[in-house]
Structures are given as structure tokens and as C-alpha cells.
Amino acid sequence: IKPSRELIAKVLANRPPAAHISPNARELIALLHSRSVHVFLLSGGFKEMIVPVAKELGISLDNVYANSLRWDDKGEFSSFDPQSWTAAAGGKKRAIEHIRQLHSAKGGLMIVMVGDGATDLEARDD
Image (tube, rainbow, N blue to C red):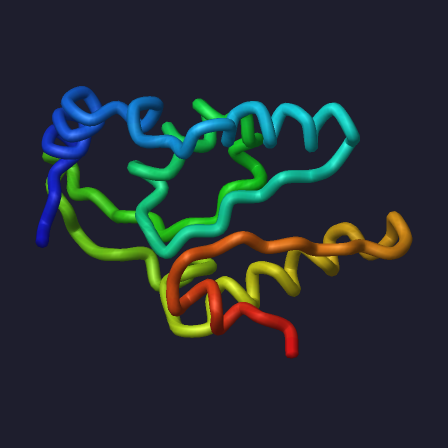
């Protein structure tokens, strides 16, 4: 698939993320934030589709780890960014380790992950 910026904008307009978020997710994230818990969104999806979800949930865009698309000067798909955290197998696990390192100076860090797919399972810390 080779999406364009225009196609992504149309998809987001026709299927806004707010309509597809699990019930009570907003409230859960608001509760976590009220308790000073850092919330991150790790996805094998594309930032162009994930950022609106993060915004809807109140998750800082600095805490979003997802794949990036590259565009040509006409707004057409050019390539995937191979440097994106989740662009390769094991990416979510590497992203979690990065998050752990960023917050290690703040003392012990407990990471809780909720997921529903194979790339979430491979991120487990056995």
C-alpha cells in the first residue's frame, strides 16, 4: 500500500479515532496522569494514524513510539523510516528499554504494558 497524505486525511476524517477508542480508556489515562504516571503509546502502526489517538487520549506526543512514513514533495508515499522504533522486529522491546533508560535517574521504574498482538508479546521481559 502506498498511501498519500491526502488519503490519510480522508481516512481520519471518515473514521475519527475518537469513535474507535475502547470505553473508559480516556478515563483510565486521565487517572494515571492524576497519579503522576507516565503513559506511553507504542505501536507498529504509523504515526500519522497513531498521533490522533494519542491526542484524543491525552498522551504526550513525546511519549508516542510508532513508525513514520516519508513523503515526496507532492505528498505521496516515498518510504518508511527504517530508524523508527517499531520499524523492525523487537522494536517495542527496544523502545521500552529506551524509556527505562530515560527514566532511570528518577529511581526505580515499573513498566506495565497492555497489548493485544504478537509484537506486544515479543516485548515481554522474561
